Amino acid sequence: MKKQFETNAIRTQLKRTENLEHSVPMYLTSSFVFEDAEDMRASFAEEKDRNVYSRYSNPNSSEFIEKVCQMEGAEAGFAFASGMAAVFSTFAALLDSGDHILSARNIFGSTHSLFNNIFPKWNISHTYFKIDELDTVENRIQANTKIIFAESPTNPGVDVVDLEVLGAIAKKHNLIYIVDNCFASPYLQQPLKFGADLVIHSGTKLMDGQGRVLAGMTVGNAVLIDKIYRFSRISGPSLSPFNAWVLSKSLETLAIRVDRHCENALKLAEFLEGHEKVNWVRYPFLQSHPKYDIAKKQMKAGGCVVAFEIKGGIEAGQKFFDSIKMLSLSANLGDSRSIVTHPASTTHSKLTVEERAETGVTDGMVRVSVGLEHIDDIIGDIRQALG
Ligand SMILES: *Cc1c(COP(=O)(O)O)cnc(C)c1O
Image 1: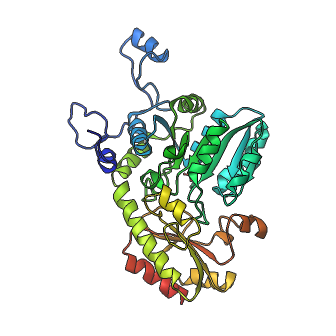
Image 2: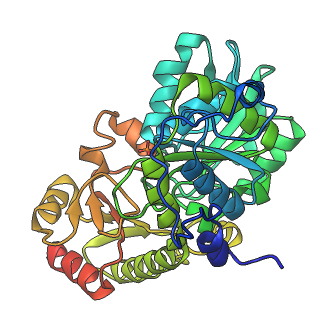
Image 3: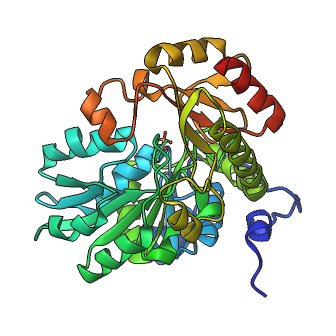
């Protein structure tokens, strides 16, 4: 019988050793031994599905990959040392010099830098489209376009992209469709259902959820994953067995944690929506969100990030951050500890005002990654800081 998400997250595990351990041990080993000359030859000829060297595969990584594949409904996957290692290796493995990427403009800062500053070195170009103008996407496809890419919900504006619309365009024009699903986690949204070929995650965020390790993952179509695997086993961005072990444990509690993150985030968003010092609030499962219907269609709940704008611009924003007592001023998200950030003075400070506006960042904008503390304490801290 097919088991449920929560059950698979817990009961998918490596076969027990002769020690009959209940919880899976860590395989901190860089290499694996061969039985004899024939085993050695057959292993290197890839006639056997077995571990050879931990840059290629390791039992802990394999377990972590299998869990994420089950969650996303994917055929295969590869685990990376960070989310950006996953993004870089996925594109680098699939693209040749002269190829073109069609991407949403609202994407993670380092991915944006990769497209703008690194890929042009290898003659890989890109065009951005606005996520509010999906009807213009087809016109931007070129003869050399190979990949279409988007994230949803977006960072830090918490906007939502209709994943199904992009899936139909990708299918019609035979493009590889890749979605960064980091903000939703595999529990809230499975982009493969909407036509994606590959899904990328930063395990650093909700997947670990406790701010301990960096990790990344790409899952999806087995033929594409094989190309990514072959690129990565040579270039070496693999996840460490220790981090894989931590993450596989983290996934056991993903559903229950993300449920609470979302419950807390919705309550905070509702509180802020009624507050006199707040101009606007953005949260996918608030009815006032311009993409509320799309969010409801493709997500199980709204996620852990709430954005809002404080009245009074930069000055009011700075006073707010200086008054925060419990929440962490940090750049991460998806942690059990609630985090507040000011994108205009941190992650987006290098952009011009116009560029910031394009990504939905205003001077008074605050991004909250709502954690797992009691909601009364989270709201209490934000209420007193708003003054
Ligand atoms: C954090 C993040 C990444 C990069 O992940 P790292 O683990 O920090 O390398 C990529 N995409 C999104 C949407 C992110 O939030």
